[in-house]
Structure formats: structure tokens, C-alpha cells
Image (cartoon, rainbow, N blue to C red):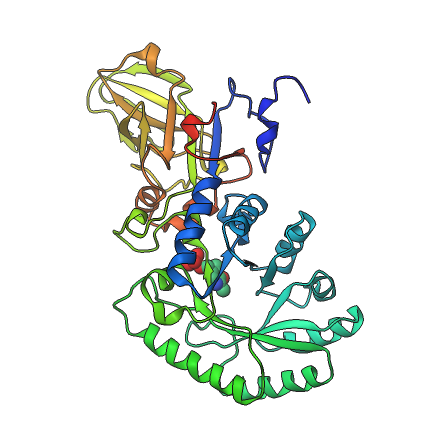
Length: 400
Ligand SMILES: *Cc1c(COP(=O)(O)O)cnc(C)c1O
């Protein structure tokens, strides 16, 4: 490592180029102090229920290992991933908390999962595979049976539930598994006025009661995602699965995360790569979908859809030196343009920081609104081309 790479102590989780202070062009700053704060808020809110920090999809784009470690330090007692392969990477990185994976195919390495002490979700067909893997691993599997209470994705339908319980009971009797959990997933908890959440909780209660009648001694019953964590105390049960809120974002349209004491953990920053004066009527970007309405300055930002920002986010806001400007024209693979207006100091603005979203700038939700999507997708799709820089506390004060 060269003497210049002073930031190596902060362990960028992705590519490590472009991370020296003088030359960086794009970065996602991940504030682990905010991750910890968010876990503590939620842990207080749901106690005595436990908190599972959901770090699938590389921690919603924030870096699964760093976020998982911070979450556990702050009181999360479980980690959750979609795939066994994601969970195994956390184990390899030394995370040894309770850890669950819930989305499998016949290619899933169940035996490695059991050997790594992962908890496995089972919706149906997986049961026999998990039993065989437990036999091969010479270790009983820890299983959470999933009931589909209405989402219509994974999970056992209610009419198959008692049969699944029966099959699981035989495997448990054979010593091949222990059913430690029953869980489900909510469909509309981000729209608290809708009645379906009540119906799902009712169906969940019935499924849990049947599992208990079947003799299972459940450690954890769990159904709540972030929106249910924040609005449905009756959905907390023994554990909640905290995804979006862990990253400090609000799942509710029109409601700021601060209302729930949550702080966004990702700040996406670039800097102005070019500034130039153009006449009125200048077309901007592929397709020339924007034309200047006066003589003005255009600023070039070196981030595009290859960095994971949506091409559809024309008119998204960015912040430059404390002022908000709008993306103009079509976002390209590597770059987009903002209209800076006629009254700028060119020398000052060339090289200035551009905050796309996060601390000191617009929000990921503003970008989601501009792109016609949700904030989950905005942060999760920030691509590996963007170096992640881990900080503790406000990034502007962290020795940039
Ligand atoms: C992603 C996921 C979560 C987390 O949902 P959030 O709304 O981000 O909190 C919880 N449970 C399951 C099964 C998931 O797939």
C-alpha cells in the first residue's frame, strides 16, 4: 500500500481505487454511527422483542459486513439475508451472531449452511433437502417454517400448513432438525390504513397456534418489517426484521425518517467535472430532451446509470455548495448535467462537491420520487463502481 492510502484504515468495502482524498470522483459515504443509532431506536421501540438486522443485497447497498457488525454492536441479536450464499459470506467475515436465510433453490448449499450454524427458512419443498443436508452434516438444522399469510410469494399456503407441520415433526423426531421459528412477511404494512395487515396477522396467529399445538417449542415468531415495526406494535412478536429502517430511511410516502428518530446512513457524493457557459436553446444530453431557456452555465457530474443512479431520474435534485439544482436532460452511463443558472462563480464551482442524496443534501426518497420508484431501490442499486467509504459520525467532520 502506498503512503497515500491513508483511508485504508476505514476499509472501503468495494473497489479501493479513487479513494484518496484529493482524487475521488464518486463515493457512497456510509455512516456506521447512524446505523448503530437506528438499531438502538428500534431496539427500544420493540423491546422485549429482538431485532434482526436485514443485510441482504450487500446491506441494501451499504456493505453487508460493515453494517452487520455495527448492527450487532448496537444490540441486534440476529442478522438476516435472502440467500444462504450471502449469509455464508458474513460467517467468513467473522460475524457469529444468529443468522438466517430465507430464499432458496435446489442449488442452495444447505449442508454448508447447517455446518455454518445458519437458521434456514422452509416454505415447503426445502424440508426434505434440509433434512438430507442435516444428515450429511451430522448436525440438526435450525428451521423457521414460513406461512404465506397473504403476500402470495414464498411461504406455505394455509391449506398445506398442517401437512408441513407434520412432516417437520417427523424430521424433528428423527433428530434431523429443530423447528425454532414460525414467520411470515407483510404485503401492505407501508400503507397502514389498508385492512390486509390485520388479516395477515390473524392468519399468522392461527398458523402459530397450529405449530404450537403440533408440539413445537418456538423460540421466535416473527412477521414485522420496517413499516410494521414503526406502526404495528401488535406485529412485533418475539423478533422484528429491520431492513429499510436500519439504513435510516422511511418506508412511508410523505413521512421523513426523522419522525421515527431514524437517520439516513448513506450519502452519495460526487464533484463537478466541468462547467461551461451555453446560450439559450442549448440542447442537453442524449435525445436533447432539455433545452436551456436562457444563457446559463451547465455543470457536469461524473455519475450515471453505471453507478446505479436511475436513468429515469431526470429532474432529481442535487445539492452543490448548499444550493439545490436539478438534473437536466437524460442521465447517461457515466454522467449527467445540472443547470447552474447564469449567476455562478465558475472557478468556485468547478470541483465542488455534489451531494446527490444523504446528509446535507436531498434524500434518497427525492431521487425515488424523480425516478418513479422507492427509496429501497435507490440505495440498493448503487453499483460496485462507487467506492464505499465507512465513517463514524458526520462525514464532513471525519477528517476529509
Ligand atoms: C427484505 C425483507 C425484510 C426487510 O424489510 P424492510 O421493509 O426493508 O424492513 C424483512 N423480511 C423479509 C422476509 C425480507 O425479505
